[in-house]
Length: 415
Image (cartoon, rainbow, N blue to C red; front, side, top):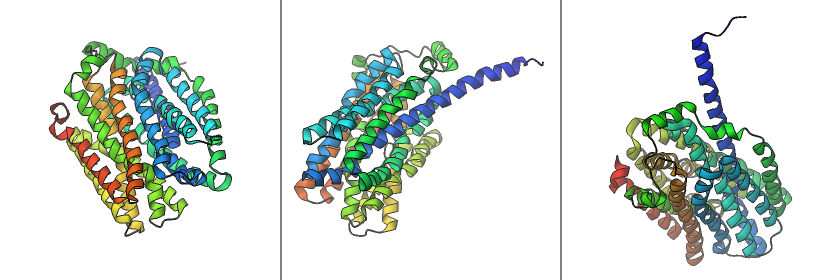
């Protein structure tokens, strides 16, 4: 039998880490599809729950706001737990929280029960299988290619929306929203079985090549959370996450309801918004591709311009509810939701690299959770006060503009 040449043996050794890296990427993508899809499915449940109990928009949207707030509050804890206990414990806890929360929600009768289960527990569960642990784990395998890897994972939000929003509407139409939540809870718990059987010791190690490079380049610069919070880049990234999330999530929870009020049938409204998942993939990859061509700052500013165009089209839809404006809104606004996330994650990982990067990045990500909570709650409150979507859209537009400002004025983000 012929023996492998030294070159073939070298290629074989390189191929295995590459395959493992792709497996890790697939795992992070799958968990993000599931988590984000479940979280965004609340936009479809908003009307049936509101009609079942006679609650106003702000009361129901408060559940969604708590989901975002819980995810933001949990982010620093998740980063620290990941640094100390590894990904297996983090991801398993997330699925356990999701399973229990949806089963409780299926039998809830009072607003506080929904706020506790669908709000706090679901938000924390999504965060435990979401962008903070995924960014840290993928950083160990992809290094300089982290923005591209994170673009793929961030696009899972879109895939989850595309799959679970129409599926949620179909389940609600056929079996009711309570049984739909029960199915979500059982599916979350069942997913824990294959998750626990994965080779976590191998996944946690990271790429040997990257580990050697990191050691050679003395990557750990000694950052701690306290020292990072004294640096202007920390607060610049925090504020970008915060204000952008306000703008995006003031609109997102109410998109399906807005389209229904504009005259679109419920399933068509849910499906149209679900198709944002397709364009989100291209938006994520496109902005990350532009990052390598024209640089980070121009790429981020371009993404903001597209988001603003989407908000304008959504505003016009209330007077001109037609296919072309709807498609333009879905393409522009949908493709840019979270499109800046991979670039912001990579920027944070680069500036604050070291052993505490999980904790630091988790603290920065709190801005996103806080902004999402404030934006969705504020959006619902504005709609209830004014009985109009126009002030809500103006509020979202101003917030998006504020989120863009750090990339115009902060030195660390302009380079």
